[in-house]
Length: 277
Image (cartoon, rainbow, N blue to C red; front, side, top):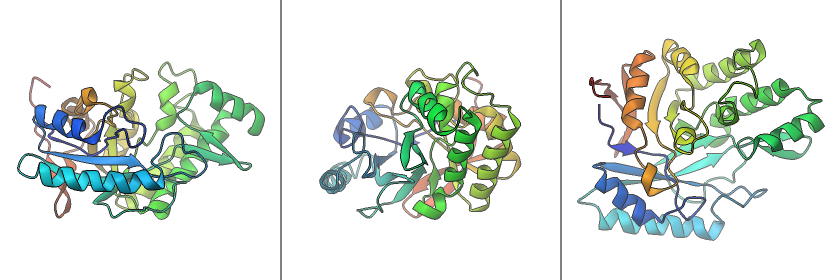
């Protein structure tokens, strides 16, 4: 199956490396038929990576301009990556990705994906060295992300795996860890949310597996959950990074269809697996 849509895309309006037009041109050059932009919504406590209020409106205006300019070439959808601690959306969107980038503990925001050392320092100071208490707080927050953001898509479900490529940061089979993510997973599936199979960690060299990893994907499939595939692209080079291979992985994990966005909302398409994938 050849995937011709990516809905997780960042630009220079937030922490991406390229402006929207370059990302659109890259999508066109790679044969994609639609692209969704998901700029990081404003988080007041940490403005280092997200769009400011002013830039949020500029982002919307530029995407509306590009939508008109490329209307005969590629579909452009306007979204936001809405963190649990973001302000409410400042603009009208076609879809929202709901993510958790921080754990709030004792009035301190701990970044989940900044550095391993940052997390370990916070775990030692605030959790008496218990990494699983930190991970439980992460998944408890994620379990509530739809209630807070009303998102369509769940972003990078097991984001703490970013620093766990070798399995030494934490034991992904630990009963407390499994119980924490299974609880969040079941809540979000019951709410009908779509989980993205996100290749962003792979594209940046942090992992050799997507978010969520195969173990979790198989459980989502067994419970009748929904998935889409996305590259969490921050540059023109990664706009379609391994999306086709993620379709094969989804199929191998038990999914028969993936979800994509159209003009009338999300719809499912059957996964067709070719030998070359």
